[in-house]
Length: 262
Ligand SMILES: [Zn+2]
Image (cartoon, rainbow, N blue to C red):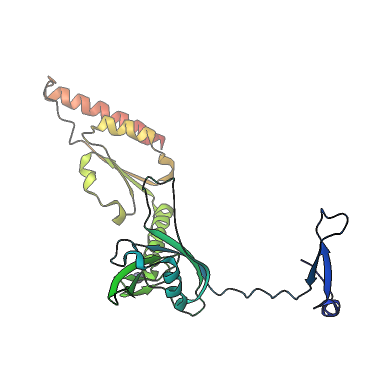
């Protein structure tokens, strides 16, 4: 290719006949006559897409739906950039993939539907029908929620996700309360509450005190402790009422000490 940056110069050499010699032809024996022509600017693509075609062999179309015929079929949607060809992937465990591919510029402001209905006439003049599947990036899909076609993600879903994120951030910013306690707290809906909730099954007061020592309590202004229900003597513990009281007193003291640190 010859590059000429001056337009007038380019015009002056256009259509001129020259002789070209190959690099190895030192004695200039084999001249190749060449006409200098202007290179056509490549047209800019509007919406080029890589397409995947599925289920051609699954259908009753048999060998009728050749790649050539399919290429012809897709021409109505745009300009074919690469014709339909089989996808062979030997790295896959499947012996054969019922998949084809092609590249098209969707320059007709048309989308290719996910299901394409094909009718092909066979040698005997009989019409054979089949539906093949086409997929590509940003292909419109039918959203049941909006009852309409989307080209990308569903806008409502995007909104939901944004809202969830906002709630999470809000909660992180405004959560000033920690509620800590036994399994009764497992019933609490954490998302409906502006507080962090920690529930430990079977926890006695002493266990909660211990759990508290592991939590980053500095970030809270309020700590609510919900415990005591499990401070009953176990099956094999021989504690009289006095003993239970002593144990509770001792555990409460530990808890108080732990809370005093925060
Ligand atoms: Zn939607």
